[in-house]
Each structure stands twice: as C-alpha cells, then as structure tokens.
Image (spheres, rainbow, N blue to C red):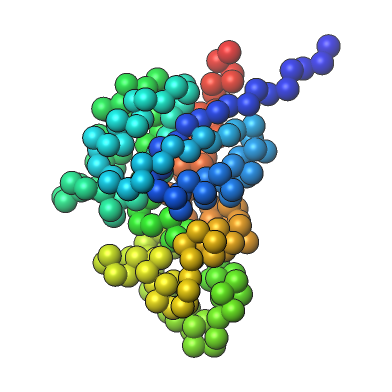
Length: 207
C-alpha cells in the first residue's frame, strides 16, 4: 500500500504593498513549495493599521492566514511593541488560525543578509562597498537596520545607488541572497517561516 503524498496547503497572506507582494510570489513561494505550501498574497497598498489589517484578514477564506507588514510604518504604534500589535491582530481576528507577522522595519532589510550580493548586483564601487560594510557593522542583525524614515533600508539603497528600483533591483538581490541566508541572519523572519511550516504540517496531520 502506497502512502498518499502530502496535501498542499494554501495560506492567504495580507501584505503591505508591491514589494511584499512580489517578494512573496517570486521568492518566498518557490522556497515554501518544498514544504507543499503556497502563500496567496493580498495587498493593502499601504495605509497600515490594526483595523485595516484585520479588515483584510477577516475577509480571507483559508484555514491558516498570516500577515507581512512593516511595524515601523504601522499607524498607531506609539508606545506599542511589535508583540503588542501582533497580539492585537490575533485577538481581533475572526479566523481559525492567524499567524500575525510584522516585519520590524522594511522588507528590504532582508536584502542586507548578504551585502556582497547587494554590491555585486548593483556594480558597487569601492566606496559603496565600504558604506555597505558600515551599515552592516552598525546593527546587530539586518532586521534592525533603521534609524528614521530617511534611513530605512530602501532609502539607504536609493541614496547609495542612483536609479535603484525597489521591485526590479530589490527582487534580483533577494533572489540571489536566498531565503536560507535570510533565515540565518534574520531571527524574526526565520521564526515566522518556521511557524508557517509547522502549522501547515499540523493541519495536514489533523485531517
């Protein structure tokens, strides 16, 4: 008697904008396909708050739902930690299982998991490579890269490389860096993916 192949699990994911949408579709999904998981992104086009995220979350139809939005740009986050906002999303959700995930800063922070790839992809000069190294050394992890709206990861790349395109260049860098390197360098991102994989496996096992 042959065993049945594992079922694919589709998980709808509410994400902030185009960068996150294409990152999920083109970079994260090929990685998760090994685990028989497909994320179906739903974009909010910015305007991130607990109410707007929950509005999109509560319209989803999959048994597992997750989010991928930027904590730093979250409206109403004054005095509230990432954990506070994730808990507010979890409590306010009407879904069977919500896995709330807030990216600490921008998605582009993940690109800094390997600055040598950024340098290579953008044909960096010696001085630009030195600046990338300074950024890397100034923060404990890539997920910590930010000091203000003017120094967000994408703003740093735009300032460093004339003509940097968030979608075209960003996805090229992300693909070359790879999810495994991002998981190695970015503990929050790693924990989120681990939870998605474990939740999908648990749902299969319950059938």
